Length: 360
Image 1 (tube, rainbow, N blue to C red):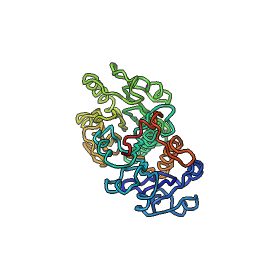
Image 2: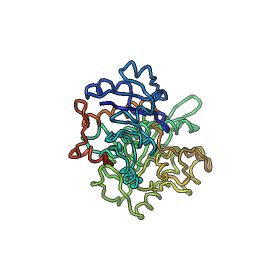
Image 3: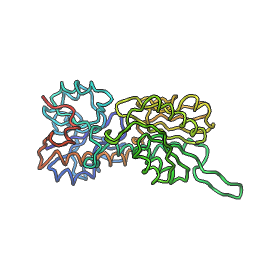
Image 4: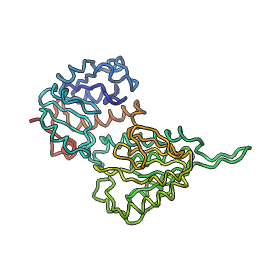
């Protein structure tokens, strides 16, 4: 069985790292990578060849391999070039656009969307969203520090005492928790909001203050995702966020509801009254943003407040992001491929969730 790895058109990452050879070989898989696919991640073609990969053109990978990998979905014209009954693994985010599933049904390939892996203990090692969110949370704090005109830790000097930076985290999921941990390591005073009651203990275990808004909707059946809240709850939350934001120097916004527009938590009025020099990093930018002024993939300034809208900061850590993505893919392939034969067994809950279109 041949696995083909495509060069990304929209990302700096690559879907399989050179270190994957041993596990792929154990599964009976021969890996072939498109020329130059790993260069932006620091993995040369020579390094892949040294590790047992073959290199090939994009056309050959599309038309001749049994399993095709890419992070960003390829164009329809390239889907038509794939072998009949091939398995194509990418990230389609059908929870944001349900129509994509019907569209994919016209192609004679099996499509797996890795962002549909369930967030269960059994599937944790394959959870690409968590892997990338963790890196994004880390990078968000570094990004904020880069744009902030002060330093994070308290420092006592002969010239006077420098107070610690106050950081507020909105959303204590994977990205938020990593942001808390990173900000704390840098010496900041950190507090965090989250609608999920289960997040309180995790936030406090990292040394941050948990700011709770009473009356959140029950999220126990949401599989670890935040759920839609009532308008009344969101109004109370915005009021409390404004109160705390006015005292903060940096805000890292990560709050998202799967399949919906991101909740607006930082209003225009809040920003207009924040301290000049404050920084907001909005990781929810691609789904509308948690901040009123957020523009996706742009850094802007409003009333002296810098607002960074970027939902894909993991791509700026492309070396480690590629390695983690590769490990997630390998762990998924291990439940699909045995002795060089791929079986998409839908009795397996992980495969059933991730397989969004079957070859006809």
